[in-house]
Image (tube, rainbow, N blue to C red):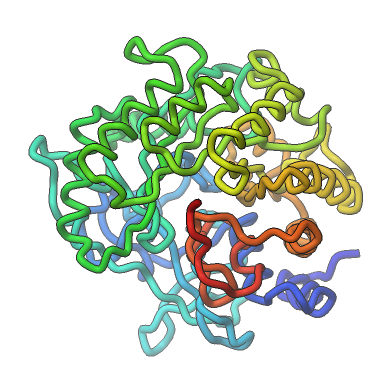
Length: 445
């Protein structure tokens, strides 16, 4: 029987898994269940141009537990992109957490009597909250009037420039869309709200935005960029997936040679296509495998199963190591959908065993996956059916299993994610970097 309050659940898991950083327990709970915001903690207008706090950019998915019309003030007055937790009753080391809004969350960000922001759980202040400052480059517009935040937002406390250059996915409709993914809905809801949300971002706009970032990011906090967007099953602008995304990399690397670590998130493509990514200047390839279990992959990723198939997908991931080197192939999976009804595992033991099998498969080939903590967005089939997401215990045990499997295979944290270790990590959409031993950032080979 689960403890009656969220506080009791969190503290029970901290006690049972003392070798998992306590920061990660809080962070995973915030990522899987969201956080609410008092009006005092919101960052400015819906366009994100007001205030001195860096606003949430909705860089690819909504990562919210409600649709924009249901978010109230958090839609009219944007929440921050991320928050940073420190101190409090658990003496938290600096922890960067991606903001996922849930008005019904037991976690609330609000100002205290002295005006300083804190994170409150079940009504008790459990940590101090820091907000990301509005970066200087967000204050400057492109020549056509578009904001840098719309064209080239940064996340992970400024470490990563996130270039979603294709805002929709050609896996479309119930028979093709991944059942946990709201990329297409997110595009629709922003258009419906009258927000700027470009479907295909022109290359010249990307380059102009990067020029502004490069000019004003004098501390060189931005270290990497990710090129991504929806899957392309036919063509966009006459280009297949490798050439479409690769053409942006080519343009960026020609104008800014080696200024940033270039990464691309795309489908698991044939080796010749992957070679084109490499030739265009990409350093790290993310062919995401989404979920390990065969049955769940087929049911929850129907488009990928239909167009490529799970076995071929995995073969292509391993083939791509011949192009990029195993260290620089980093497939993502969506942690938690293993336990999503109606077809997911019904016990944490079963789900962890399945995921561990996948981790062993890839790590035995020198490939280190990473993961995003599943946010059950309400417009997706799995989000509707599982509004609470996966149990917190699953996420904590996954961190334990991930670290142990990495150590078993003699591997270290993947490159392109900044430093590892509690108090050091900046990766904001899961705690896997917070839960690994502190070390210098792994160089790209």
